Image 1 (cartoon, rainbow, N blue to C red):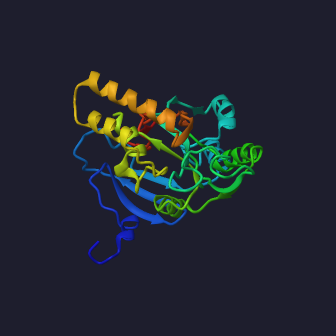
Image 2: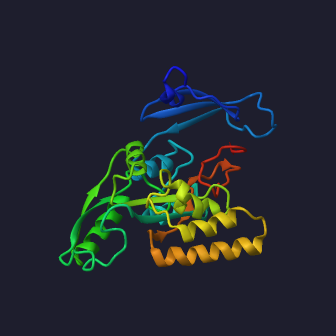
Image 3: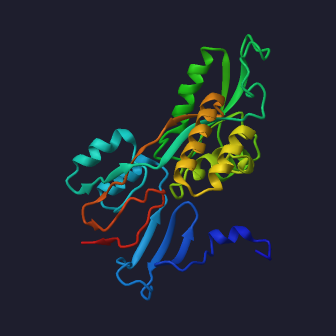
Length: 287
C-alpha cells in the first residue's frame, strides 16, 4: 500500500483461511491449495481448489454436466429444470437474502420526484439506464431487464439509453453519481435492518452503496434512532416508519429478491449455501 500498488492485492493476497493462494491468471483461473496445518481440524477436505472464470452461464452449465467442474454459480433460470433432471447433479436452493432494484439518481433532474409535466417535461425526456455487466441471483440478465424497462418507459415518453461498463468501472462511476437510473442490487451482510436501510438509503452512504444519492432527513432521523437502541420493539417501530417514508418517496424501485440455486455434482459433500452471498468451501469434500 505504501508503495502505491493497492491493486496488487488482487495478485498477491494475504489471509489466514483454510486455503492457500497459489496463482491467479487474469480472466481464466484462481488456484488454491488446501491448508494442511489449518487450526480447525476437518474443515479442509480438498487438496486443490480451482476457480475457473467462465462468464457464460450456458458454458458453466455444460462444464458441470461434463464433470469439468463440480460446483457452479448463477445458473440461468430457464436451465434449472434441466439441471435438476440430471441424475449426476444435485441442485440445492434456498431463499436469497438479497434484492435487485432500479435506483434513481435523485440529484439529477427531473428525477427529484416531481411529475413530468409539472417539471416541464410534457413531451418526455432522455435518460441513461445503466445495466450491470455481471450476473446475480436477483438479476441474472440485467441487459434484458434494461431492455424491457426501456420499452415500458418509451410508452410514456421517457427515452432511455442503456449504458454498461466493466464491473469495476461500473461501480466506480456509479459511486461518483454519473448514472441517471441504475440496475443494481444488494445481498445483506448480517441480517440487521440497518444493513439495508442505512447502507442503501442513509445519508452517510451517499458516496457508497446509496446509489440513489438520497439523503432525506425525516428518514435519516428514524434510522439513526434505530441504530442507537437495542430495544427490539423500539427498533421495529423506527424501521417501520422509515419504510413508510421510503414507500412514499421511492428513491429506488425494488424489483425482486431471488431463490439462490447452487448446482453441483452429486459426489460433492458438505456444501452449504451462504445466505450472505459468498461461495464457501469450508467442510466441502468429494466422495
